[in-house]
Length: 180
Image 1 (tube, rainbow, N blue to C red):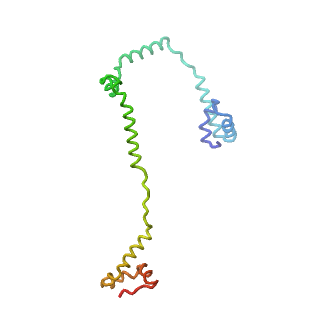
Image 2: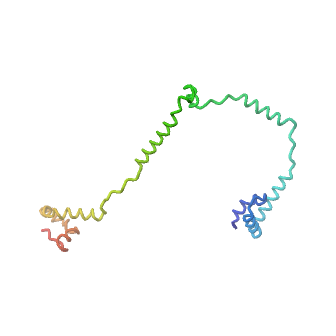
Image 3: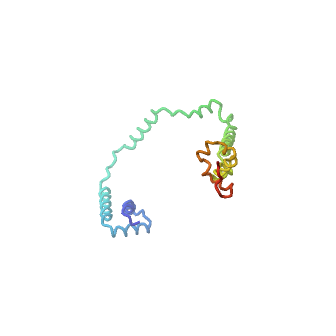
């Protein structure tokens, strides 16, 4: 509580005696060591003493009566507020006797909607997908299984596309097969 900003925020409460004992002691300890906050506390005390020393003017006789009369005139001059639309609908339908089942129906509808929304927003269980490495190996395996068909393609043999495939090394005992 030794921060100047914190102490400055509590100076008025300290002056008024509204701080608890521990907080009051902390403010007083800070004021004993900080000349800026002590000066600000003095300025606050001086300003409050000047305001309290000012005379309070007496109210003119009959001011409260005049005020009350002005309020009554203003209230009488205002139009009554228009009731809410639902109040007018209930009044036209003949009161609440007709609408007694509506709150239960509304509550049931709201619960049904909440249940439906909750069920559609429930997290779905994760599907068991193979890791990316397995997918890459399976692609290489598919190419390796169709190797005989691919070997017949002269274009692939010339481009040497199949040589970097890792799966071909595993199929032929660790050594790279010849494609031509």
